[in-house]
Length: 267
Image (tube, rainbow, N blue to C red; front, side, top):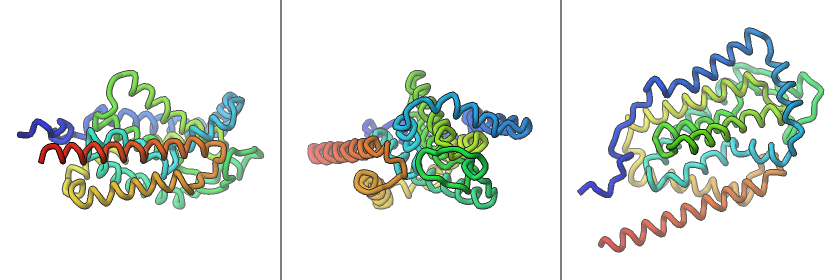
């Protein structure tokens, strides 16, 4: 009777397993070392000098993957396998947004261009450096996909970590964030995913019926926004942004058509 229900929809997850805290602990540990050794500026300059030789389109393409309106699109390929992911993703986005937008004004950390004489890639922001919102988004999505088990296998997991890590590094190369911003963004993003999984299991009804359809509609609107008008401030990466949005919309349409005909064939 339940043979068509995905296993991931039946098994309850424990988001508070010890291994789930390795990533945020590493982020916080490294951040403490950087803070205590007062090497934030030095590491920033070393990374910039070592990696700025790569073309700007590469780094702007990587950095836009952590945009708050682009990152959620990476959930789309896994929604068929795990429909509950739409609710977990919604909660994760809300928690990660609160994390960054509450801490930024409280910390009131100046960005690198406000202190150093340097060129930046993209918008020249001067305040609101801590933590990195793009890194938070990247590790929120990464943590969610890995902890719920839709990304599995050593190769895909390593590649996903590499991509999320590059998003953080790109914020330094772009000249808009310090290493401390990136490390705390990594930790905060992963913790946001942990809390989202926990809360989604506490309130499962919001991931079913019309609330799920409403969240799915919002995801479609985000994809359309990315495709037609969203300006991330990184013009060199606009083609990649639109490609991701186009693929996301096509994927959702294909899944919708497949679900419609599958339902029709069983009635």
